[in-house]
Length: 140
Image (cartoon, rainbow, N blue to C red):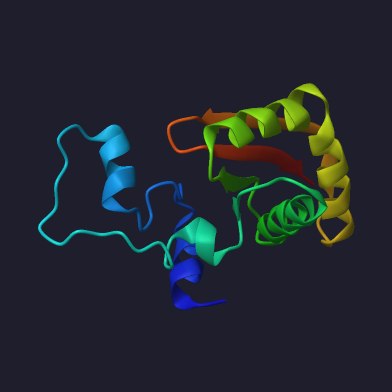
């Protein structure tokens, strides 16, 4: 794990605002401009962690389960995933939380960690401005 991601893990910050482009900052800041235009995304938390999705199939579900297992193993109870488009974000919210797909992911995560993840209890926080779902799970 590199220093940047380790630092985020230690201080347990919301990752939404780490290494945003100017365009992304402009979503929540009117008339934003910067002296040094930022368009690079390589250092964005979601890109670096493999949690920025342009689809949500089996591979993406497995990455989500690994992220949850990793967070649980570190004593955390939240994991975030991000989507490249609003439609995919909205569709995934429905598939995970209205249709119950999150429970299979929690079961996968539970098998990947020595910590017990409660596979019957989960909540989430929506962030439609940035297409982020924060998954909140119980450990122990």
